[in-house]
Length: 208
Image (cartoon, helix red, strand yellow):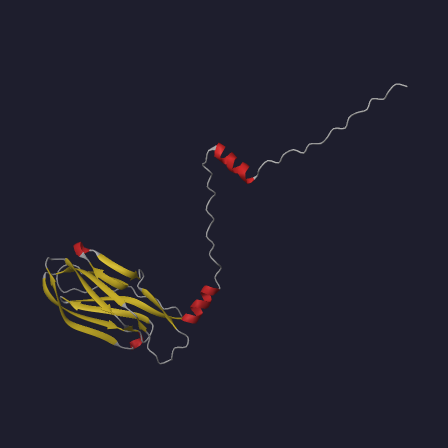
């Protein structure tokens, strides 16, 4: 049965205004100047596919080599707020909590970026992960997915694909001058001298 993905739930907010959030998932995310963000290995649909070796032990817990999460939140009241973050793993296999961080919102309705980076992210079970953030009296929930795929099956699938043939470039017309083209052709195929055939002299019959 195919699992349906739940849409991100609206963030309840006890204050005035509406809180909006956007989750970005990538291998690496860097915050730059002037509000710019550089993401490496971006997952636009927030779905990560892990290739697990077929000979891996059944009890081994796979892990992503790196994972970066960026939660952009806007519509918060101004002031300093404490942030509590929880990542809930699928199928009740565990959760990861972090609290004590504080953020500063300068303007009413201003936006903040909450960045989380992991050099090794354990994936005890595949499925839907929930990122839950509590700050300024509101709870925000965003979701992403990590799926397991057998590495051997993936390689066999690629091996069975037809080869990719690049289209041949169109022929480029020779732009050299006509006399240069004729000279090159003459050098490649020199003319053959005609063979001289001696003409037989016709005898005139003598009168008797």
